[in-house]
Amino acid sequence: MEIISKYFSDFSEKQTTRLSALEGLYKDWNEKINVISRKDIDSLYEKHVLHSLSIAAVFPFQDGTQIVDLGCGGGFPGIPLAIFFPEVHFHLVDSIAKKLKVVEAVAHAVELKNITVQHSRIEDIRDKKFDFVISRAVAPLRDLWKWSKPLIRKNTQIKEEPAPGLICLKGGDLAQEIHESLARPYITPIKEIFEEPFFEEKYILYLPK
Figure 1: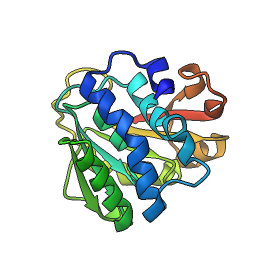
Figure 2 (figure 1 turned 30 degrees about the vertical axis):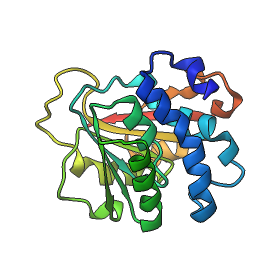
Figure 3 (figure 1 turned 180 degrees about the vertical axis):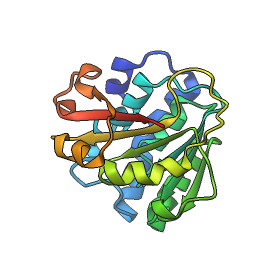
């Protein structure tokens, strides 16, 4: 938790309690269902929680915003962001049911009321609309943008920037991937937000609809 407090200092007591509980919950569940690599579980707060919260450092989501986390895996970035933004609703989607079992258990344990889950393939979601799509290292940007565009509502309740769109966490050399997507995302290097070496080649990509 120290690494989280290094960058975010205005959490409520409830938010701090929820964030502090994540380590024990994920270590316990990871023994049953491997949702986080064994080598990363001891770096949960840096490599998963803080990485997820980089989105919160850039995007001040308004209360009432509706967000879908495509390919949420064990709940990242959705769960840390749901703790950070208690008045924003997060819909977490994954095609692997056992991962959603962990998401539901963690959300229940820390009493998160602003999360729902859906067991579905990303490309099969068509019945809901959202203000933002978020994702972390799930698929090439070309595919993410194709899947995301139908989900982003046109008549949004959001009156301020940022405009509705896709926000994804990516790593490595993205030049070819971005070229193939035929899109022109706004790119924020996470190393400009967090100084740890882990974030050296990590980026936030944002594509407004």
